[in-house]
Image (cartoon, rainbow, N blue to C red; front, side, top):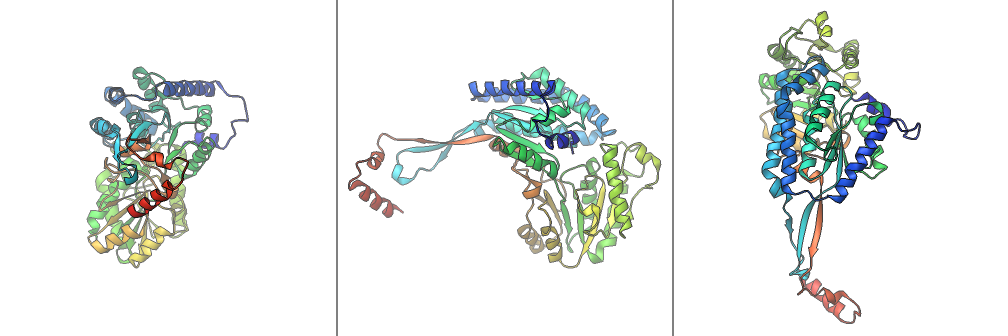
Length: 489
């Protein structure tokens, strides 16, 4: 969570005079708005050029981005930055470039019989200026993915990076500024004053990725301007192990989904529901897979650090609370090795026999800590999930088709992956978004283009149409028209 944004949104803009960073942001915003009003209709060539320049920003500086992100984390696996960030950005740009012409084309819409031979069309139109409040956990991918959709839709974009990723934020600001005019795409600084003003600006659309609590504050601030928002939040995404599941296979895939980016992933499995008789065996299998993947050495370059000391201490508190309440703590490595903390790497941890009263089950964990709970009947697992806020993701493991469809039908979540974790997010032809407390709205591929466009309905009247029959003096022609419409219906 971005602490400056949290602080800023709890303050009134009227408390003090605008600072220099605030004034600079407001001036840039108004300049961008002015350009969007005088030049609202960017053509295909201009949009493709902007996408190509954005790709060049990443391609020409990919290694610098990897190093900057690693510096912000303390250590970030270079492979994870490549596969979970750069490759995702390239894929989004490639997909948008390939399909943009068809996305921009007016859509034919059926015309009611009584209005024929008139025509209806839906014309995608840019909204104007889109604001993006970006997170720290995947700073490249989760910053640029919504920007790609917004630029493809013909908008101008302002990005507010996270204060927890200062090295990345400075590099993005520098490299974007080299290839984009400040009225096309702009990256702000991360001062508290900028965070304070950002969500209060009257954007044509605002995107926020982060915690549910801060998301509520962002939506409240945006609501004062009637600014529509896309909220990509988080929450507690469950995994269900069905009695028909292959435990070894499920353990491997959950271990990977949980430990990617050291669990600092909004769609990471947050807890696992396992049949009671298999609870201990499953937990041991997950621990073995965690050890196989990342070993027991805190210096392992494949294992990512926790973003800050404060987040590290929070994770320690969650584990200590669970242990004090009777849970069994399983760790594949010696957790008392001081090198874990020295590298700010949190040892992979399972909380076996977790209960709803534990702190780890009260908040999103956002780290390599995995509560494992037992259930007696499949209906109990479904009831446990449905008694809580709707999650951003849900994972189901098993071979029983009826059991699978029961879970899909009786639960509501932002997205689902069956027999694996995370990979629904990577499907560019599917939307990514939450529901309820896990978010609102969606983007990815064409879904992003539609989110950042206004589908403007246009009616083309034909000179042969009898619409004049609706004009006064009415006389008997309205009765005849009503009779005709009743017949047609």
